[in-house]
Length: 385
Ligand SMILES: Cc1ncc(COP(=O)(O)O)c(C=O)c1O
Image (cartoon, rainbow, N blue to C red):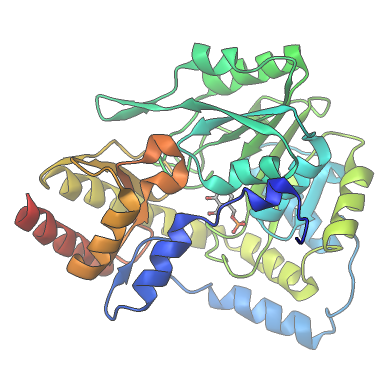
């Protein structure tokens, strides 16, 4: 009777929230269901927000973003990626908001969008809200490594596709697209006219080389139909602050400023000042990534010793996504783990049908907490196997 659009009615709230809601009612559960570190935001970032507030950063800012933050992002991109023209940088209220702005800009009703699965559900949801249909290329776990069948993936990209969205390093799998893969996908998009949106929010969480994962920024020119999305949430432990950015093609800044204006006019002003402070101390990011790398190796090694698990290598992001023998309903299994083991994991089916039977564990927490959760999981699996 309320006559909402079918695209909205057919969306489902992610089962990760359902599982977390159950977990919140049980005392002592170790929550590893969400994608966030348990570290507090660094004090110098918090101070910058407070100073910003006290200095009167409480009013509207330009739609592109707080100018000192745009400058700081340009410097950050030059240091870690490459030179990007200042007028290609747009500050957004989170990576999620950036993905939504991209979908609003390029995805049309009835058209197709290509993604790689298993995938964090929000990536497809923004295109579904636009009325598009999703084509998914599913990663295969071969010899404990995630592999993309590149030919099969490329064959999904044709003239009916408005956008291809890749997320590397990927949530939940940690799959990383190498430069050859990025170049091949870009080449196919250039030929069909599809937009290529690269979600690089885990870019710094890369364990095979220093600094960062391969990036689409290494391949595109300012004229490509390509957008690179990033966020302060993960690398600067700022999930609740809601701050991100994107790199857009040349000349499109005014269009994305309009979208920023008509969505939320731009992120919170003093939060943008905190972003400047965050970018100024890169050693904090490096220390977090080093910590996550160690935790990831620990988690994979320990999980591989437990009965009934298939545990792929982790090269990026901060999740272990593993298969549990005999589990056909990952939501029910996640609830059982809460009740019987005191551990909170995300159910694999939250990441698409291909994730059913799998579970995601976020290892971005402190090592003691991680070990405790793994002890509990191990005891549970040994008792039930
Ligand atoms: C793949 C991916 N992209 C984007 C985001 C969005 O992060 P945020 O909206 O907090 O910036 C997340 C968060 O979990 C994610 O996993």
